[in-house]
Image (tube, rainbow, N blue to C red):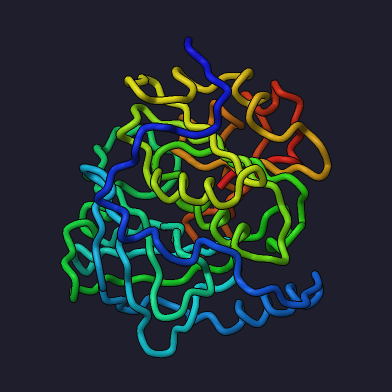
Length: 325
C-alpha cells in the first residue's frame, strides 16, 4: 500500500461545483460568548424549532458527482433556522396511504443560515428485501429527492438537536476534533467543519480523515480544499482512496491503524473523534451503534453508541473519546 503524509490533494477539483462553495468560509465577527450563554442560546433555538412535517420548496440543484447532488430547500413560513449544531432533518416519501418511507439527512449548510438549508443527497435505488442494512427502512428517498426540479416540494421535519455524550456542542468543548468519514458520511462532519472554523470564538483544531473508493468519489472536495487553504494548520485534511490515480497525493488502500495514528489527534480527554459513513465502514472504524428497547407504542428504541471496537479501539481511544453518527 502506498502511503503519503501530505494532507491535501494537488490535482484540481471538479469545476462543476465551484459556484456553490464561494461563501461563508471565512471567520465571522467575534462576539463575547460563554459556555452558559451558548447553552442558553441553543436551548432557545431548540424551543423555537417547528414540530412535524412541512413542505419545503427546492430552490436549486448542484451536481457534485454522477449520482450525488447538493439540494437547497427554502424554509416555509414560520421556520427560521435548523437549530443547534449539528442539525438534522428527516425526509418523508409517501408512496400510498399505507406506505411511507423516511430518511434522515444531515445538512451541510451552517445551522443558523437564514432562509434555506442544503443537503447532500445520493440517489440510492431502493434496497432489496435481503439488504444487510442495520438501520432504517429500504432506500429510495434519495432517488426521489434527486429527481426533483426547482419549484418542486418535499416533506421534511427538523429533528431534535443531536447531543454528543449527553450535551450539545459548544465552542471549545474539545481542544482537538478528529473526523472520520466515508462517502456521504461527510455531510454532518462538513457542517461541523464549516461552523467551527468560521466561528471566531471557537479555537478547536480539526483533523479530517476522508475515505472513498476513488478520487472521483471524493464529495465536496473543492470546498474542503478551499477551507484547508484558509485555515491550515488549524484544519487538516487527509484523503484516502481504495484506488489512486495519477496526480493524487494521499493514502491508497483501506484505512488502517497507521492512517489513524498518523492523521488523527491522539487519545486524550481533550480529544473527540466523530465517525460517519456506511454501516460496514463504521463497524470497521469503531463498531456500530445499537438500539435500546423501544418505548410503548414505538417500533424503534433509542439509538445508543454501543461498545467501542475496531481501529479506534486498537489505537487506544476509549468510548468517551468517540461519537458515532
